[in-house]
Amino acid sequence: MAAASSSPAEPVDVAVVGAGLAGLAAALGFVRAGFSVICIGGVERAPPGRTVALFGASLDFLETLGVLGHVEAAGAAMRTLRIVDATGSLFAARPVTFRASEIGRDAFGLNVENAVLAVILSEALPTVARWTTEVVDFDFGADGATLKTADGRSLSAKLVVGADGRASPTRKAAGIDMSQTRFGQSALTLLLRHSRGHEDASTEFHTREGPFTLVPLPGAGNAPHRSSLVWLMRNANAERRRRLDDAALAAEIREQSRAILGEVEIEGGRGLFPMTVQRVAQLTTRRVALVGDAAHAFPPIGAQGLNLGLRDVKAIVATATHARDEGADIGGDAALRGYAAARRPDIAMRTLAIGAVNLSLLAPFAPVHAARGFGLAALAHLAPLRRAAMREGLNPFLAS
Image 1 (cartoon, rainbow, N blue to C red):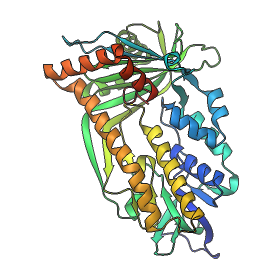
Image 2 (image 1 turned 90 degrees about the vertical axis):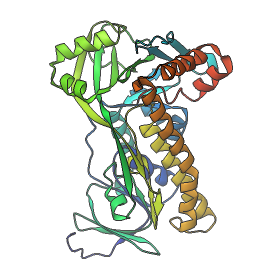
Image 3 (image 1 turned 135 degrees about the vertical axis):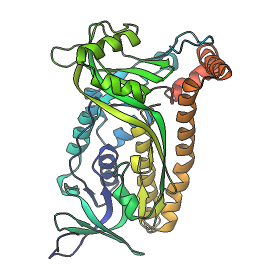
Image 4 (image 1 turned 60 degrees about the vertical axis):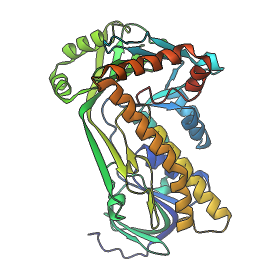
């Protein structure tokens, strides 16, 4: 229970619960749109080895938040995207390479470390809009919500945005059901130093256990060549590799990558994440809208993650802004229905696409392998399809 508060609840337009990347972006988005906002959540530690590949729409949104310049300075451009079929299938396609210059772009997107992006967003958020504490009690009323925090404060808000991750206390307090699908795979994430330059190219190897994806990072200190790795594999192999020392693991990474980056060295810690997909029964309920991992959680396949979460954030800010401009309740049923309707198709499509890509690699059936090989060949040779895929950032083929 919360400690007793001697002061009345502080009134704001929007309470954002969660101070991860999606929560910070949401709070900053509402601030930029002219709402009074408080973002509640402790400082989150970024998982080891995690980066995020941000594509066009996400970068455009970060520009509206006023932070794109900082992200560009801290990230590495992805000017080339490469897909290599390393499944060993009889129907394996030849490697497919896409260049942003083919569609008149400088780059498909930027890759930046999660921890660095969190600092950028946090520093852009006004101090008065940030409470580094936890919510311990929620009351979602017909006319507004009241939140009480662990340090004895409380606030009232017209709209509560749940951006508090996969385990989302906001979602639980609101009574929104969540279902989870577990796969027999885990993703190993880490940062690498390497002897050869990445040439601004992101390379994804399709293996029989899942994608192995190398994404460029900027150099740092005495390491001019750096990349991030997301390696999806069966749980038994993930556990075995987790126990390897750095030299042994680096040797396996070099072999799997066909030494395209030369000699590799592991930088910092490792992250290991189970392959799960989470779905919510609904995106909204009274006074509450869910965004980011609270609304949908994916494994690190297809550069979905934060890119999808930022589209949630953009949509809820736009919905609330429209309601305010029309003199309507920003957290009322009509506004929340509009948000849910705007986001549901995109989330469903991405969920289906991620499952299809992963299953096409794991399935032991020749027709599935043939279909995947044909699809990659079509991307390589059919100009209209090729251009359409590049404009989409090749989602869901690149890992985040």
